[in-house]
Length: 206
Figure (cartoon, rainbow, N blue to C red):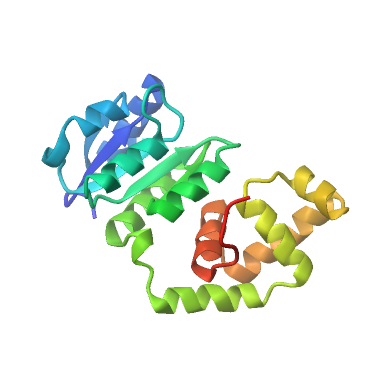
């Protein structure tokens, strides 16, 4: 829905920020770019309706703190996080707080654009009963071993860490992961986290 919303990009890395700005402009979106989260927060209620795309790790206020500040202030704009490997636990926590999505670097342009379109249509915190039931049914199709691998993945563990914890090989973890992705119709880790949260597999992040 280009032209109907403003995408607020919060990214401290200049080349990445300029790349996102160019990509979103080419896609037809109006874009506001910020080098620091403090710049976005300083605008207060003047933020145009749309979506916020924020890096997780930044100097000063990071992406998770930005989300907390916005929610405390009553801001309703959907926010998605861009995260590097190793930030999965933080991103999961953010999604539990209401972030709509997170993308792992590096990501393809079409993946970001699709995620933004989805974020503009609905918020993660507004998942309906039908979505929850779909998630629970998908999880019920997993074997006990697949469930163990699944919980390891969505709590930020690497394939090697999961393999060691379960006493299996990393290749076996990859085998189970492929089956999990197929059974849950997940396209990536963000989808797996969404299924996990919707299906209420666990009450806490370990």
